[in-house]
Image (tube, rainbow, N blue to C red; front, side):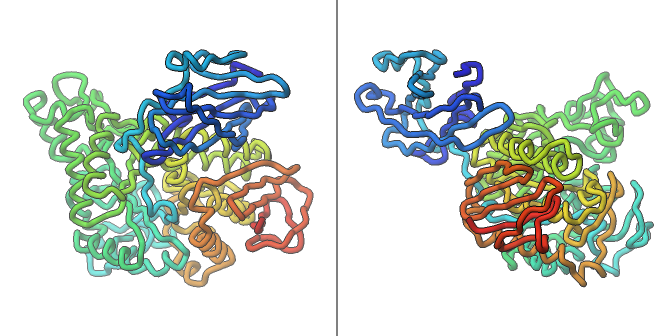
Length: 556
C-alpha cells in the first residue's frame, strides 16, 4: 500500500454530516492499490465494546487516486472511527497515527479519528429547489426590449449587430417578463439575471445606487412584476450581487474624493494615503479599473451596508437567490455575516459565488451554497474543444471535481458551458453543433444544476467580451431548431428522473468513449474517430452510428 496516497481528515469534505444523525465518509488511496476498505466506528464513550463496521465503496477515480465512500447512520452522534484496509492477505489500519500493521482499540481515545458531535447548526442544508433547478442566464441589455415608451436616446446599437464595450441595445426587464413563457418552454425553471441597478454601463457591474433600478432597464414595478410572474410559473429568480466593488460615482466614494480622511466613509475603501489620487490610483479597485473602487469588506460598517442591500431585495421582492460577483476577493467574515442574515430571512435563498478556482474554503456551509462551476467548463473545453483530455482523462477530471467538495455542495453547483464572461462554447468548438449538443448532454446529466446562457438553444456564437454579449436572435428563437428541441429534451430528463436530483454518479472510459452513469441512465459520448454502434436510446444526436463527439443516453 502506498501510504503517501492515503488521506482522510474529519470535519472536511472527507467527513461531514448530511443530517443530524448521518455522516458521509471518504477515504483517498492510491489507484494502484487494490483495496477492500471497512470503516470501523462507534460512539465516543463505548467504541471498544460496541464498535461496528461498514464496507466502503470504490466510488470515484481520478488521475492519481481512488476514493472510497460510505454513509453512516448513527445512534450515537459522538463518532470515533478507524479504517481497516485489506490488500490480498495483508490487513492494515489507518488512524490519526497513519498506516499501521495493527491497531489497539483499547487506546482509541488517543488516536482514532473523531467527529466529536453532530450539531444541527453545523449541518449544511441543501436548498431544496436546487435539486431540480434548470437555469437560464440573461444579460439584460441584449435579451429583449419590452418597453418602447422609455427614453431610448442612450441606445446606440442596432439589434442584431456586433456589440462593442460601450454598446447599448435597449433590452430591459419588461422584455424578460414578456418572454418568460419562451424560457419556460425550454424547460428552464430558474433565471439568473445580470445586475439591473443604477449604473452608467450596459452591464451594470459598476453600481452607483444599489437601491434603484436603472432607468434603462425599468423601475421597481418592473422587477416586482418579473419576480411575481416568474413565481406564478413556478420559476425562481436569482439576482447578481456586486459587493466586491462599486462605481466611483457612488455617493460614498464621491464623499471620500472630496473630503479625504475627513469623510466618514474613508475606511469604507482601501486607500494608500490620506486622500484619493485618481491619476496615481492609490486605492484598491476591481482588476485595473480605476472607476470601480473596491469596498473594504473587513469594515463592519461596510458589511452592514451591503447586507442591508441583500436583505432589501430579498424582503421586498421575495427573490430566490444571490449570485455573488468576484466573491473570492471579498472577506470571509463578510460572507459569513451575509449568509446568516439572508438564511434567517429565507432559508431557501440560494447563495452562489463567482469563484473560478477551487472554492472549498467558502463552501463549508458557513458562506456560499455553491459556485459557478468554471472548473467544469474547462474540463468540457479540454475534452470537446482543446482535445487535451481524452475520454479517460475527462472522466478523471469530473471525478476529481466532485472530490473537491461535499456532496451537499456538489448537488447545488451551478454548472455551465459559457457565460457573459467567456467565449461562447459553440464558437470555441469552431461552430461544430455536434460538440455543443454532446456537451449539453454532459451538462444536464452531471451532478449539480445546469445553466445555459441565453441563445445557446439557438446556437448563438461570440468571442470574448463584448462579443459574447450579442443581442438575442428572436426570429431564429421563434422558429426553433433541433438544438432547441434537444435542450427541451435534456431539461425534461433532468425534471423527471429522480436519479438526476441525487449525487449518484459514475464516470469512466470504454475505449475512446466517455461514459457517465446516473442511476438508471447512461450517457455515452464517442471521443474517438471510429464510429460506434448506436444502441437503443432515449436521446441522441446521432443517426445510424455514433460518430465522433456524438452522444446517446440509454436506460441501464
